[in-house]
Length: 78
Length: 424
Ligand code: SF4
Ligand code: SF4
Image (tube, rainbow over all chains, first blue to last red; front, side, top):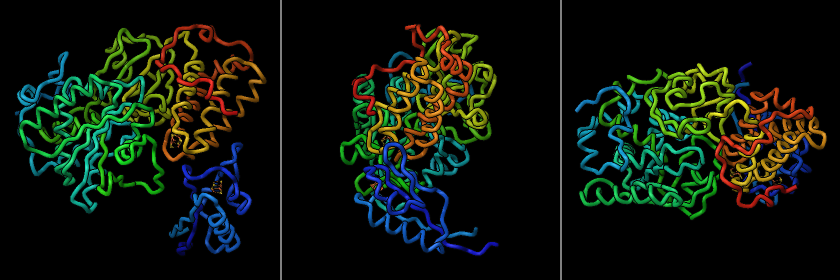
């Protein structure tokens, strides 16, 4: 199948991030934390049609106290 | 004027002191390829000599496509690696060749200003560059040159950190999510090149791409400068064609003929076991060994030295040099140094710690704003691979003899604040 599907990845600016870990609580499916509390984000693009995941990604972006997160959209064939 | 295709090239005419502008022009000539410069640079396939080995012509293309009348060329001679001396050697033998290259680059991208960055720690080099710039000023032609002297730090030579310094006097790298990324000084797009790269551009601008490609391999053309230290007769900077075997480079430098291992690419580079000495010194041949030419650094470590101890000292220093902006780097690198120390001493359940070290390497990799932590991870992973038997010895409580030796082979500066390093 080479339909063009929109995907997204969550990206963190490591300089802004302070490691409070709110993103992990808001989007546990996408974000894990390392032993120091900094987010390890799932690097695999997630399909935008997965609305539950997209919603939690948005929650994480909005909930980040340092505004260090953003959603990057990737379009391309899967 | 033509030039023979033998070495030295960028070190041509090198004597104990820097060439004056007149001597430089006598030795290298003043004729250039003129308008064909961009085409020649593209055909030369010159790769950046600063560490990342990015194609210079591509960088120039990217900058050419930017709008703006006030573009800037940044010549990076910061040389953050304590074991690297090539840019300093180059600037103290022929600063004008570097400046020529910068001038050609400025013409190609349409820049009006050239910032030459030398760390203020090297007052002699600062002085050499100052003199060279003064000589050019007297001619009253060409673009404007500005000498910049940022403080010396390992990460200060990273190009985004350098540009950060030019903008805000902070030597910290910046987060650049989308690559290739165009750096800006003020609002002007900036082209940052290593000093040696700039010198090669100065040669290509004179003698053209065909001449340049007479040395080197098709993928890594030209010659390159290498700083060789460690178990050698005398630490030197050599100019070698890319693709020469490592063995002959080491032999020329008078290195220990039967070493244990070789550190390639600097503190953020990789160890190479001495049994692979016959590999060609160029990126395409080194890639299967996980190593690269990097910033042109070779450190020879003899048999009897402890590779883990050497690595541990480097990692501890690198952890201290982190700019501490990103969590995984600021906390992760001291943790790696600590784990290595535990493995080295064989105390406190070393096998568990060894496993933790491997996991931590994987966790940290790629999560900083710059490549600083990635380089350290690469170094640690290569050390665990190359010194596999020694690691086993340490873990089993039977360390090698080298660990008690006070003689060190990789020159690591003393830590400023060792007590602050461990943040656990
Ligand atoms: S919420 Fe923001 S600041 Fe907190 S850990 Fe996540 S990315 Fe970092
Ligand atoms: S990765 Fe390390 S050295 Fe690079 S910007 Fe972040 S903290 Fe600084």
